[in-house]
Length: 138
Image 1 (tube, helix red, strand yellow):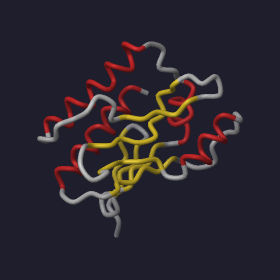
Image 2: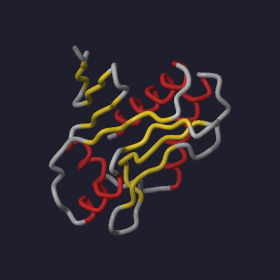
Image 3: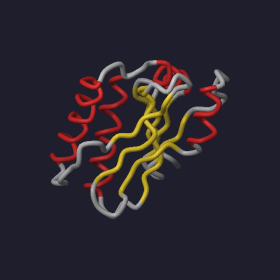
Image 4: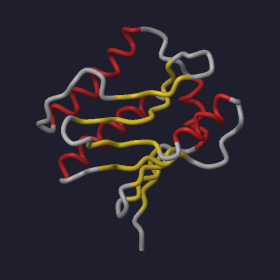
């Protein structure tokens, strides 16, 4: 039996390491623009601090966000990369999802994020911590 936990519209499926963001929160994140360089830097700095707590040296831009049809960065997270061999957390089906959002089509499904190339629990914990911190910003 799969163990699932709901937290503010987030579904964490522990047996498959899939993170699910409700579609209404995803649409809200896509509509909310990162409106300044300072805000963008602050978000990246928060993520870097989390990654560094897990003993990973971090680069400046580990979070990558969707761009809306006005070519403005939004709060919708596409992926998070930590240094190493492409250890990452990424939105599944991002191209189709972003295309639909840019066309202002309502999402029909919640968004799924998966972990890739994870070799140990420290890497998974670091990415999960960053993802949970990002959700607080929406």
